[in-house]
Length: 334
Image (cartoon, rainbow, N blue to C red):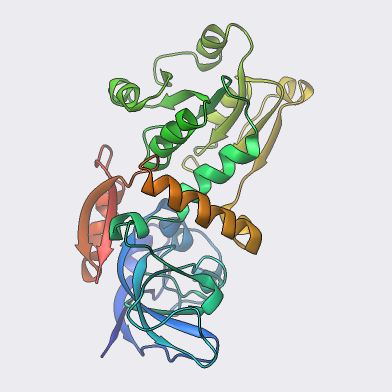
C-alpha cells in the first residue's frame, strides 16, 4: 500500500508547476486522537495553485509541501481514543485548519487529521458535492452573512462567472438579496441571467459605477465581494453606498488593490475576508456544516462539475482548471 503525493520539490520562478512531482510517501499512521483518511476525490481551487506559486511555507520547505485545500474520502484507520468515526465511513477532512500549515494537503492518497476535524458525509450528499463542500460554499455563506444585506438590497460581486460566483447568485436569491454581477466576457450575461442573476455588467465595455447607479436608482450597492483586486477594486468601491463594506477574498489580478480616497472619505470600508481564519473558530465551523449541508440537500447550492483526472495527471488538471469557459470544477481522483 502506497501513498502517492504531489510534492513541490523546488520552486521554479517562471514556471511553478515544473517544480511539482508525483512521489510516494509512507501512509500516515493513526496516532492517538487522529483519523487517517483515504482521499478519493478532490476539487481544484485557485487557492491550491496560489499555495505553491507565491512565497510562503511551500517555498521555505521544498520537498515536503503537498497542495490541496479540500476533498472527500473514506476513513482508513482511527487512532486511540477516537469514537466519533469508524473505518469505512465517508468523510470530509478539514485539512484547512492544521494540515495545510504543515504542507499536508489533499493532493495525496492519504491524510491524517484530528478527529474533531472530520465530518461524516450523509448519503444525501454526492461525492462531487462533498469534494467541494468547504472552499466555495463556506466562503459564499460566510461573506454574504457577514455583509448583513437587507432583503431587496443589492450585493455587487466580481468574477461572477466562477463556480463561487454562481453559487452566490443562487444563495442571494434564496435569501432575498439582489445581485449585480461583474464579468469580463459579455457572452456570460445570458447564462448568468438564466441562473437567476438580477443584473450583469461586462467590465470590458461598460462603466461599472455608472451602471450600478442606474440599476439602484442612485443608492449604489449595499455591499460588495471582490475576487479580483487590482484596479477593479477601485471601481467596486466607487459602486458601493456611503459606509458600505467591500470584502476582498481573491487576488486574481495580483497582491495589490487600488481604492479611491474619495470613497474612503465616504466611509466605504475595504478589508479582506479569509476563510481559513473563520475555519479556526469551532463554532463557525459548526454553523457552516449545518447550514451548507442543508443548502446542498435542498439544491440551493449545487456543485458545478467539470472534468475529472487521476491524481497522476495533476499537470493536465491544473491546465484545465485555468481554461477560460472550462464549464465547471476540475477534480483529481484516486
